[in-house]
Length: 247
Figure 1 (cartoon, helix red, strand yellow):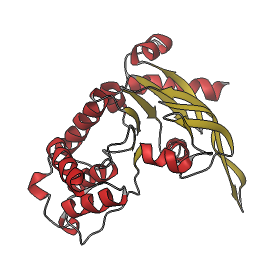
Figure 2 (cartoon, rainbow, N blue to C red):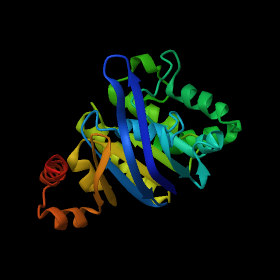
Figure 3 (tube, rainbow, N blue to C red):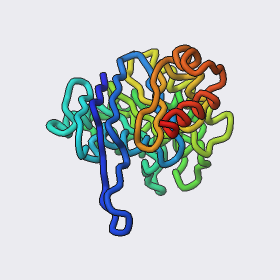
């Protein structure tokens, strides 16, 4: 389970002074559920996720992942988390299979377990046709599937997807969305960050709308539709932002 309580992150800029990237964000995500963090670029999604993944230390607030404090036990948290970020890197000269073997060894997995998990991920993400090709020959979709597989090779209990379908064609995106649903079905705790309205409608059990670093609204799709008297997610999003700006 993930519990965020008052997460806040500020940065100092020489020209603009103190910048509040995330302000007092609190939410909970349970096993076997998908929490959607919906916001435009620059809304604070990635900063929030990086704090949960222990890549950034909160300025204020706390969070626990699988019962572990992100500030007090970061190494243990990282062992429980698979974090797919936009900056997730691949080595161009390795094949997809070699990439998974390399990251499997980094996570201390025996060779037989790496092989078994590689097979399962290749099945789930439809990677077999390029599993033994070098990464530098890959399409964007192939690279993203390989990035997801290398992120999850250690079978983490908690999975954080940050804009996983960005720039992908329809078929590659559909494969990844199906894979995210499979993660939920296997009892994983999943956070899914995106700015694509249709994805949160299809995937997420709970949706958090973030804007200007603040969590403006939260609930199931049905809850949000009732609150804002709209059925379309884009209209709900605009109304939530409008409430904040009016206040």
